[in-house]
Length: 272
Ligand SMILES: NC(=O)C1=CN([C@@H]2O[C@H](COP(=O)(O)OP(=O)(O)OC[C@H]3O[C@@H](n4cnc5c(N)ncnc54)[C@H](OP(=O)(O)O)[C@@H]3O)[C@@H](O)[C@H]2O)C=CC1
Ligand SMILES: O=C(O)[C@@H]1CCC=N1
Image (tube, rainbow, N blue to C red; front, side, top):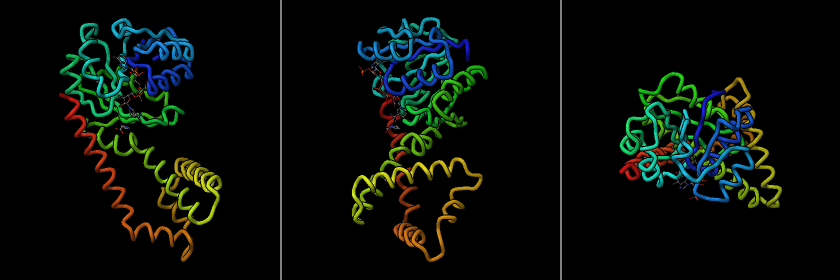
C-alpha cells in the first residue's frame, strides 16, 4: 500500500474522508490524486490534505494503480464511459457508489478488475464499516490494496457474493440512519415524560454512545448485555415487553428487507 498510487474520481464527502484517513495513516501526499468539477471543492481538498486535485478525470488516473470512483450513483454511467479510454488494463477500479453493479461497470468501463464497496457515513470520523466484493480477476495484491484503502476509515469486511452488498447496504450502509431515528424517538419520548429537550437529548446521546462502546468492547453478546440491564419485574423488562408486544424484531426485519430490496431495485434502474 505504501507505494500504491490512488486516484479519486469525485472529491466530495466520502472521498475526502478516505483521503483524510489515508493521510492520517502516513500515506505520502504524492501518492494520492483526485479530480472534481468544483473549483471550491478542489481548492479545499487540496489545501486540507496537501494533495493534487485536478479538474480532468483522465489526468487524475494517469499512472494510478487504483482508481476509486466516488461520484453519485446517477453520475456513474457518464463518468465511467468518459473515463474508459484513459484506463490501463492493470488499474484496479474501486467503486463506492450505492446500487451500481459490477456488470454495469463492466458494460461502461470494459474488462477492468473491479472491487465494489458499501461504506457508511461514520467513515467521516474513521469509525465506518464497509462491505467489499471483488470480481474474479482481482489479484490478491489488489484485494489487499482495496482493503487497506477502506480500512483507513474503519473496518473492511469481504463478502463472497455480490448480492450480499444489498444486505450490507441494508445493515450498515443505511444503518446509521436507523440509530439516528431511535435517538430522535427516545429524545421525543423523554420530552413527553416531562424532561427538558436538552436534558432528554443528552441522556439519549450518552446512552447510545455508552451502549455502543459496551457492545463493541465486551466479550459477551448484545443479548447478554441486555439481560444484565433487565432486572426481573423491573423497568427495562416493562419497556422490552412493550417493544416486543408491538413486534419490534419483525419491524426491524421488514425495514432491512425493504432497504435490501430497494438496493437491488436501484441497481436495476441505474444500471441501464
Ligand atoms: N452518503 C452515504 O451514506 C454513502 C454514500 N456512498 C456513496 O459514495 C458516493 C459519493 O457520495 P458522497 O461523497 O456523499 O457525494 P458528494 O456529492 O459529496 O461527492 C461527489 C463528488 O463528485 C463530484 N462530481 C460530480 N460529477 C463529477 C464528474 N463528472 N467527475 C468527477 N467528479 C464529479 C461532485 O461535484 P459536484 O458536487 O460539483 O457535482 C462531488 O464533489 C456515492 O456514490 C454514494 O452512493 C456510499 C455509502 C454511504
Ligand atoms: O440511502 C441510500 O441510498 C444510500 C446508500 C447507503 C446510505 N445511503
